[in-house]
Picture 1: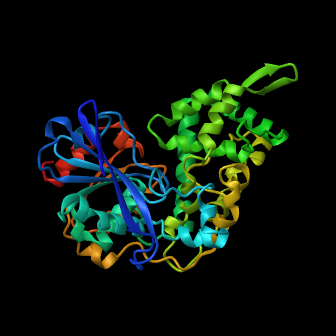
Picture 2 (picture 1 turned 180 degrees about the vertical axis):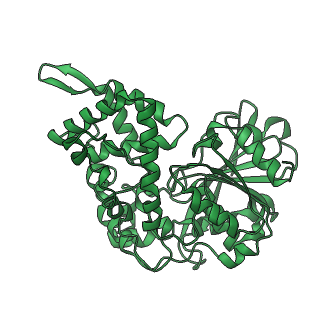
Picture 3 (picture 1 turned 90 degrees about the vertical axis):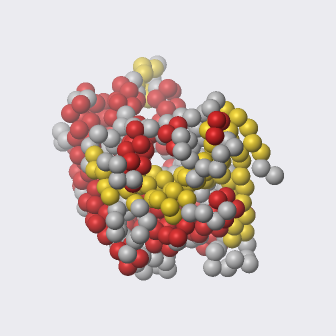
Length: 433
């Protein structure tokens, strides 16, 4: 039974669905999906077209909005919206250190997680669409990894789509994970340089923190081993519109004077553990590189291997001279599965996923070249998370796709610019701009 309730300006309904774990075996094991339906209060009885929202990630459940926040306000003016928790996230049969042991050991867990990529998510959407829309195609809004899923949707089941709207999520159709990270590290370096140009005082602050971590064994209150590599990974923040400012505020009061001398403050450590922990989204770490696997080659901890090609990211070498300590970006490394209590039990499982070579193709270039679905995409000029050149190459490969290339926003433009970003893209899809 679906449960409906109200928040300011919106009627919400909890929806639950049962789908196959493996869509190639429809009579086999099943999992549960959760989605939240949202409709404007004054349109609750109207027959509206549907918009399906696919969250970024992988590994994050859909936004838990309060009322008509962010882009949802614009969407509710003409759509009934379905906010889907993709499989393994949120309330959709979550995959965590607590639940995965139900599958068995690491080999069984890794086998299970092969069914948690974009192709399976698309099949989930097609399985539930008849129950939601009565069989009518819907508009899909894909943010970041949700955009990757949308390109898979256009490849696997375009008949389910009325319109496709993508924000910061046009993937390369054929890049190996090595190629993705080889393009990523120079982008991250540019973002770090821009941060230090904005906040030059942070150069010395970051060096002091890095030096402390290289000379002290620091364990955060939640049990996270806080190494210099973990500190550098806070650069993930720099891909967001307000990330540079938030990183600056984090660094400015890192130390406090104690009877034993200067130490990292409790307040700093509390903030850091919240930023670093994967407890709320472990699937992100487990399958992050697997979202690029499709060419018969293992991903094999690509971000870690490729980092060695960029020695300027070595904090110890930076401290030995006068170079700034460089932060890193959206990368997952083996050491995270030793440092993070939420990931430690999954270390072997992650290693088995990194070694797999039997990933199925996620995109169909031939079908995309013949695409007939209206597709629009926001491409952010120097997106730290998704390579702009890769995105534009894919845009050219999808027939009829229209891009809005902008430097007004970072990767989180849908959030930071809402509802203006969605309004611009919907107008573009209708040839109104």
